[in-house]
Length: 480
Ligand SMILES: Cc1cc2nc3c(=O)[nH]c(=O)nc-3n(C[C@H](O)[C@H](O)[C@H](O)COP(=O)(O)OP(=O)(O)OC[C@H]3O[C@@H](n4cnc5c(N)ncnc54)[C@H](O)[C@@H]3O)c2cc1C
Image (cartoon, rainbow, N blue to C red):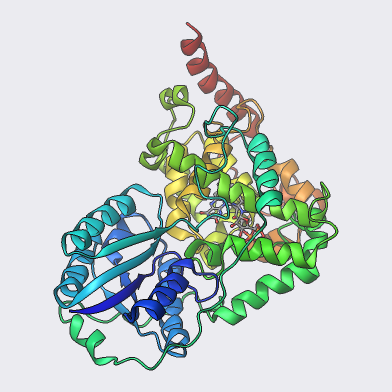
């Protein structure tokens, strides 16, 4: 039986710094095995996970592009379309029938993904193959950053301190892109798959986002070279292009966290350790990304949408569907919230400051269960990532790790005045308010405002009191 090394790609859609790919190639150079890459699209499971159509499109475009990039290395990438994770089994059963397999994968942390991998591992082992995992989604894999007692950190700041100390100790290493292999005989990859169709063309809804690996790496390098110094000053202003916009690429692994940190160290060698420098603050955001993944592994109940702070499960959210729909459609009468939601609906991406404001508004002004918002975000975001989305929502809802204390409630109007001071962002997404100036733009419901704009769906001061009461109710119960 011919030996075959299969690089099963999931959220690591890249050739550079791909440990699974590099190891498969290196192993083959010693064993003489053939190498192929595999991607299995699973639209039914994606639907179950509320994956946004625009994210699905980005993945499809990226996989088809990666097929060409891998062809240049003489590595065939078989991209097929199953329906759910169950069909992954069909592919590996077919491969095991014909080959002696070694499967190389990047670890995934979510529940169904873990179950899927455990089942495929069993299948491969039962056929005398090997299943080899690489824990490379984070620069510091979950479990490697722990307290002195050996526990996972529950709070970000000490986690970050420990993470940085580890970084300084061990440095960052990225794998090179594998060298070109001798030409392979593509026929067998075609024969393997008769049961599943090839991956379909994408619908192009994500076309604003380039998918060539070299282009994405260039975006990352340009940000680290030209923009990161101003990150601290500009990152909170949605009208300014002051953040990296790499989240969609990090989510599907076109670029790795290690590559970002390595490049940051190179371009900002003098400042990345200086607290409050743009580089240090950007690094902090990458560490938040890792923190939430570590937390997800440490507290598997999070994947079942349980709150991190268990007592908050008893909060009696109002869950008014009319208010929820107004929020989803950007029709709440609060300009900054509506502009944010329209940015999300129109582009599939939302600025971080606005994610915080609109999430807080849903939970603490409309009293709607944070899980409704979490789900809606996931169904729209091009960068939808379970750990970051869940972490962000639980932070905003005051139910998570490091959560904003429940009595600290964003005032959407003062947030708007502070972070969109000239109103450029609001004007762009709410053209009906374009003629307004100054304070009126942030609150157009006083004399001189605009009648064509929707009325505010709640009174913030009243809503604030109700939030305090909802939390006080469960906190009191807990104390007794
Ligand atoms: C309610 C809510 C939901 C969110 N949902 C997601 C999500 O589904 N996917 C996602 O990637 N991010 C999510 N975030 C985090 C953050 O808003 C985005 O990562 C960021 O806006 C992406 O823009 P950027 O790439 O320009 O980020 P930059 O500011 O350039 O940051 C660099 C990278 O660090 C990571 N990062 C930044 N901030 C955070 C954070 N607070 N938590 C975790 N990682 C972070 C991202 O990978 C980001 O690309 C959410 C935040 C909130 C408050």
